[in-house]
Length: 479
Ligand SMILES: Nc1nc2c(ncn2[C@@H]2O[C@H](COP(=O)(O)OP(=O)(O)OP(=O)(O)O)[C@@H](O)[C@H]2O)c(=O)[nH]1
Ligand SMILES: [Mg+2]
Image (cartoon, rainbow, N blue to C red):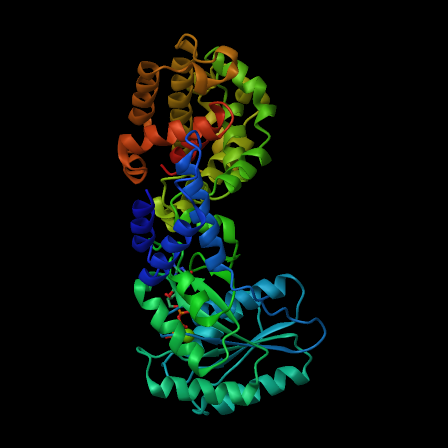
């Protein structure tokens, strides 16, 4: 088992030497001979590995805390394309939201377009910035002037973006050192791309050797990488990871949390996070709905409320990423944002419906019999009649599944779906679900096997079957 875990860790880009050390440490803390026969060895190994990994991401050093009311100069370093400029803006934005006076200095004169990138990012987020497109070519001068100016103007968070180079070239390090000497940063943040695999260690060491790295930010954790390289970065720089980058957008920056990170590294998912999310939903309030589903009823309002739940849960892929065995990238962020936007659009249409339509046991019939209703809803919500019709079609499909669910005897006995469904019933349900799914969405979910797995996981993890239903409907939003 230990061997399997170690293989998984190496696959997640954890440095081979670190894995070897971890293995020895785990062996040392567990005395297999003395272990009582009845003890669950698997669990003990797992928890020992978990503890070791937690130790590895914790350098035992407190991260730099900016001080209010004085200038805090934060310099970013990292290889080309690691995500420095993007992360600089994200961090400035993060502090700005918390009412710190934040700004950005672009000390990258190496790459053409670097200044324009900063300008564009900052303008969008209304972050004051300093830099020069052509007149000044010395990054040290720009950095010094910019920091000077912002200090005078009373800025609290002054972020200095530096240039990256393709490899760990000497010229990059000289420039970095010169900028650092000129602006005397309070904190140097090393930005590392999670997708570079085993190269992390060498890279982190090279940077730490030259400048006094104080914190680490790992970027691109929204992709395939599990981020095992982060452990090397911590070991090599002896600095804590403070944030992780989870996307290209300005708010795709999350404070680093040890436990969820380690869980994901081990492929265990973020169960705690998932439970928190599900609890936030207050599914017990859904008893009325459960009762209705038992009887095969599902109104437009029920659908509306389920959509609301999905929106409350937040991004669909974020939820999926928390479920063990599901990678976070199972649905790309772009298509997910589209899904959310579509869901919102559907809800806007339903906002234009009246109570009679929303609460009718057969809402679809109302609309098909009196087509004037379609015209009214379309006008009320500013969409085409075709879109309203599509919404009704989608609803009809849902209602049909609910009817099937209600028809399966014993499915809801005692209200707990997980306990009462047998294999055949489950298979039947899954088939129903699959038939209704958009093939592309189904594919993204890992096909039938993925769907079944998800149903099972959700039933086991969330309370009752409703969490599962709600989540499946998230998939429909993407249609
Ligand atoms: N998916 C994803 N993309 C990211 C993330 N952070 C940065 N990127 C992308 O990575 C690319 C490079 O990012 P930059 O911020 O320009 O990198 P840089 O380190 O400033 O690059 P140089 O200035 O050339 O050294 C851009 O396309 C970013 O959108 C992240 O957390 N997730
Ligand atoms: Mg840059």
